[in-house]
Image (cartoon, rainbow, N blue to C red; front, side):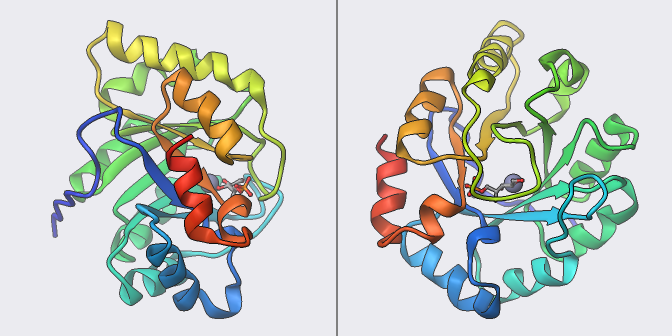
Length: 228
Ligand code: DX5
Ligand code: ZN
């Protein structure tokens, strides 16, 4: 079944705030998702970790499906797994709206991106802080979103790596010079202060775990990131 989801903005200036479920209370995921929606979240960011590509295990397609069935929010699924190609069908069936795979994973990147789009989902490509922009260049015409990791993936609550800003600027320039169309997302250590630096570099989608779910007031935290 091909689904057309209108929730992805057309304009690369439009700011999107995506709280990461990884920082939520896992004993009540439905309530935590509702809390994020009430607080003004645009998307929900779901971090899938396999204990192999990264040194942590989070959750799989069953949890993605549970979140999908409990509300209507756009699901931004970030696969930090070694073989995204082996699990793609399960994450598509679970109700993902956008599926982001890593360029460093062991798969045919072009083929995986093609499969994601053919299923009616948006396709995202992620790169780790140490990976140069050249690694994703061949695929930039085939994605809806480029995720520049601003921490080494695996855990929430890490410090933002400012050295990634240069790569975000390069991704913004490449998009313009080549007339390409992709959102630029950042993930890791994002709060109002680091979001401001990422917006300046050209990113428009902010993933934020600790600074939203663990804030004294989530709505204020999201508003501050949006208006940074
Ligand atoms: C890191 C994950 C992030 C993480 C961000 O491996 O991809 O999405 O949840 O957490 P914070 O915002 O706490 O750095
Ligand atoms: Zn993530």
